[in-house]
Length: 290
Image (cartoon, rainbow, N blue to C red; front, side):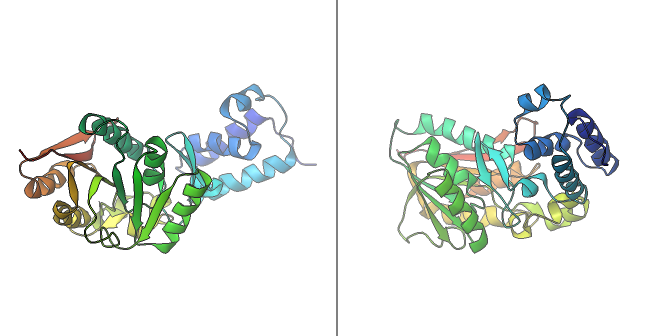
């Protein structure tokens, strides 16, 4: 007869198993909550309860999957972002906490730049799972929100998230601003584009490299290509007042801010550091010409 594990024993085993295979032991806790379908508090309250053999078998399977490199989010099929649950799969980048900061700081700047409750036009370039566009629409219901991506598969995930979370977002397939109407003007643009230099791939975790879409991770010109292309296209697209916000890789704050400053020489460009002290966001605030 199979050994009956208590919940805490199963967690201890899984944490050690993952650590021995150079995975984050904390994943054991997340996956245990997933298998038991409980929150963290309930899990700890039941810590000394027996785990059914069926639950333990499932737990063992998902722990082994993660040990082999499959992201926790792909095993569960979801990731939490800005307090909401988003579906994710191999076709989209898993939303990161840094992108939550991009939205937070962008909305904070918009409060100072625009009239309250103004019906602004917003575009998310490279939407992936739709995390930015859907979140912004739910946080600012009066805004008209559009989201663009090159990938049909990613847009399918984004549309599902928008429908599930009841966010009215218009999704467009295409490259950067190309799918928008030629004369369409925008008040706010946010983008978390591919920005990792191809040369960094060899030093990255296999969990990321083997399971997340490379077209959403890597970019030419040392990761700067899409920032350059967007910066070249933005002057003809933006209203005044207006706000542009980019998520960037660590160390890219200065070159990306320079790209924006080159095309908006009279406007304020700032690099903002994330909670870990890394240059992670670049904002350009467009003010009306006097």
